[in-house]
Length: 139
Ligand code: ADP
Ligand code: MG
Image (cartoon, rainbow, N blue to C red; front, side, top):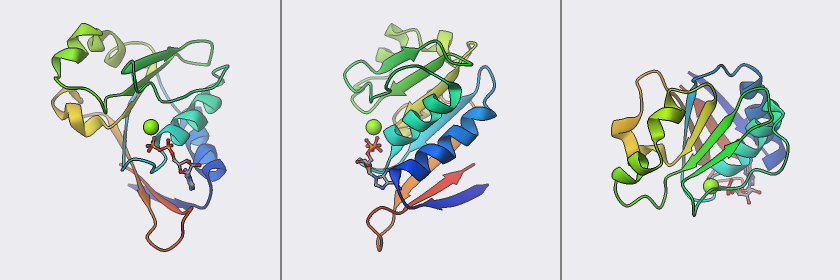
């Protein structure tokens, strides 16, 4: 387990970019934390670390956004609005989970039954004292 406290969105991005530098094909990274914790900010930094061109935003209305052009393909899931795990079947989740790229999954706890044991879990928590502080735990 590894824990860091970041004090700004930039620091969260830099931390994510560092993880991205060590990312390997087929890696699954679950991003959990409340609304506004910084999951999408983390994803942006991770994408930058992979050298993905263009801006990464939350794929809230599509569940999945695929980014090519970096060191590895990035499969960015946000399953917040998923109503039924069958929606994951419709997008063909296995192709991505067991593919050549890296999966980042915001709100992964909503599809817990699909998450492999080998997944990395990143939890982002807002500080109660300092507005911009975030405790990031990697397990
Ligand atoms: P989520 O995807 O978890 O719902 P977002 O990443 O969309 O959250 O939003 C996080 C918000 O918190 C952004 O407005 C960002 O600027 C702000 N923020 C403030 N401090 C931090 C920090 N240390 N790390 C990440 N985001 C931060
Ligand atoms: Mg988000």
